[in-house]
Amino acid sequence: MASLHLPCSTHSTSCSHINRRRVFPMPSHFTTRTHRLQVSCSAAANGGQNQNVDGKVDRRKLLLGFGGLYGAANLVPTPSASASPIQPPELDKCGLSSAGADTTAITIPCCPPTSLPKDYQIPPDLKLKMRPSAHRVSPEYISKYNLAIERMKALPADDPRSFTQQANIHCAYCNTAYFQAGQDSIKLQVHNSWLFFPFHRWYLYFYERILGKLIDDPTFALPFWNWDNPKGMSMPPMFVDPKSAIYDSKRNQDHTKPGAVVDLGMTGNTDPLQLVANNLTIMQTEMIRGNSEAIDFMGKPYQQGTQPDPGPGSSERGSHTAVHVWVGDPRETLGEDMGNFYSAGRDPLFYCHHANVDRMWTLWQYFLPSAKVPDKKITDPDFLDAAFVFYDENAQLVRVTVKDSLDNLKLGFEYERIDLPWLDYRPPPQTAKARIARLASTAPKAETLFPLKLDKVVRFEVSKTKKGKADELLVLENITVDTSKFLKFDVFVNDEDDNPGELDKAAYAGTYAQVPHKTDSTSATSSIRLKLTDLYEDMDIADDDSIVVTLVPRHKGPGVTIGGIKIIENPPKSAT
Ligand code: C2O
Image 1 (cartoon, rainbow, N blue to C red):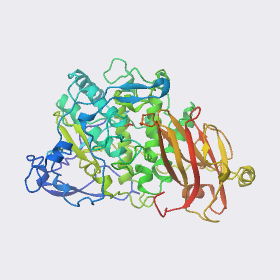
Image 2 (spheres, helix red, strand yellow):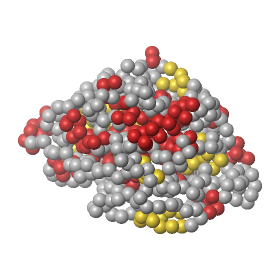
Image 3 (cartoon, rainbow, N blue to C red):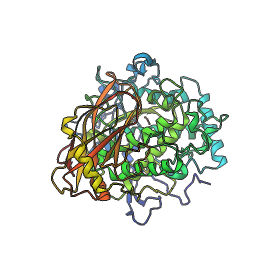
Image 4 (tube, helix red, strand yellow):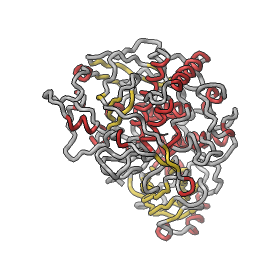
């Protein structure tokens, strides 16, 4: 049984600077992270939310909904003059959201209530709580969780903490309801960019606090769906009881059956052992093997004034997208609820899924071998000073920043320790060298095929940067997608067989995928980079002059065009 309390007391304190070790027990091959928790005294003073440092009220910020006085923590460093971090939307300008395209196009009213935000202060008496694995919780926990969701569903419809309004937040932030603040033509979208992890961390933080308040239990912690471990690769049993408050009838009925294994590769394979092997390969690749720099994992930069969907990170487009699509209901036109961003927040399982997504972020930040991605910190003020607004447990609209989301301990939660079987999982090589030499002699050169409409499996040869170069990245440029559809393709290198149901091989280099959502133009263009260094080593092909790449689409029909493909040296010299 999972305990909701920590065995030792690790209270955070206000107005003092303390050092403490992470309470997450760590395998010996991880270095211990010394954690410095800083709580600012001046930031905790709650009055004068909209005052400048000199005490004057800044009406412009108030009106713009920026929340006024930057918390003390925000006074230094001052964002550079050219910085343009994404700012919270102006809630009173929220419009109808939309989803689908052509014959399936719908508009959805999902604007949360409007009000004036205050800068959020992390409560000084925050106690560290442990989010439990959804497959290991006790009956008492399940009852408490259901009671909290029942009470949330019973709140008046216009209460911003109600079940519907909480789901609306997700819909509004991701399906064309909001404009970027101060813009009248550019829509705000928190997905497919570096805002993905911070936005959802704050979203769950407040959701959890609202639930805790409704059952008068400040220690209440959301469960996480441990889909990265074979023991958690099925729908958590508590969610499939049709009588419970956390049930949702709009789920894929084939996947609610006991024993149905999550398909992180979206291959359609139903062999449980194959699925587990695929899943571990995918987790290892999206968490470690395929990433060179922080943005490869986190997602591409996204600023005020730039178009939405600059590009998702490896985790967002991989396991995150797969679980949305796996849970969503194929009987519904747009894959509702989980299979489409506009409706995903209506399924209680969404928050359990996203707790594990958030857990992946903490693992990536603090527990993975740092040599693989030497610098995991994004220091760009356009990232750190980006901000959102949410309703807190007292129905107060509050403004929060990305920089205050970076440390889960500072926000008072940690995850139950579960083994990470993907951590050292290296998929087996299958390629016989002679066979690949033959493949390369028949595969066309990449230059002859691009731009490429990807609607079937294609194979082509790509030259390496130079002979014998062992440290490289594969770049797929100008990937233009129809955002209203589920789309996915996998990338393989020197893959000798074409069994599309098997991803558990060293030849697997990575994935592009998206959850259907809406953008104004219904299309988005981005690029992805896949690190090849470990793959070369696993397949013993570092000395070759070229590689043979296979692209395998997992969706049906058109929707993806790829502008070009190339290999560059790792680490990349410029942002590519
Ligand atoms: Cu905001 Cu998984 O979606």
